[in-house]
Length: 155
Image (cartoon, rainbow, N blue to C red; front, side):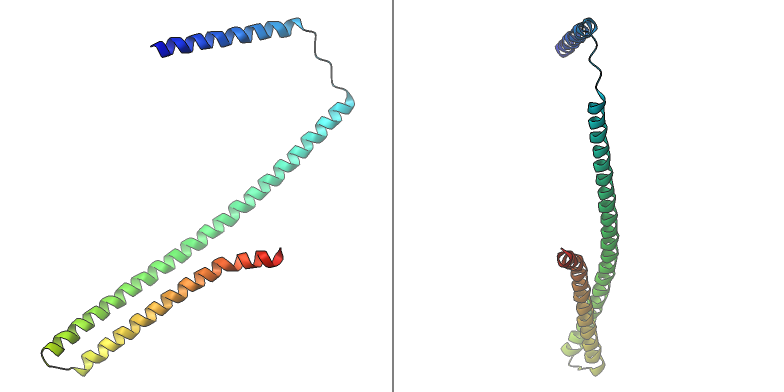
C-alpha cells in the first residue's frame, strides 16, 4: 500500500513539473524560425542518416540470408549424420550377433567356416561404415572451412 502512495506522490510531482513547464513555454516568445541554410544542412543530415539506415538494413538482410543458408546446411548435414549413426548402429549390432554366434560355436568345438566368414564380413562392413562416417565428418569440416578460405583469398 505504501508503494502505491509513493507512486501516486511521484506521479503528482511529475504532473506539476509538466504543468510548470507548459506555463513557462506559453510565456516565452516563439523560437526563431530556422534559416534556409540551416534547413538545408538538416535535410542533408537527414538524408545521410536515411542512406546509412538503408545500408544497415541491407547488410542485416544479407546476414540473415547467409545465416538461413548456414542453418539449412547444418540441418542437412545433421540429417546425414543421423542416418550414418543409424547405419553404424545396425552394422555394430550385426557384428555383435555374428561374434556371439562365433564364440558359441567355438565353445562347442565347432569351428564353422560360415560363421567365421559372416563375422569377418560384419567386421569389414563396420569398418566401411566407420570410414564413411569419418569421410562425412571431414566433408562437413571442409564445407565449413571453404568459405573462410575464399574470404581470406578475396581480402
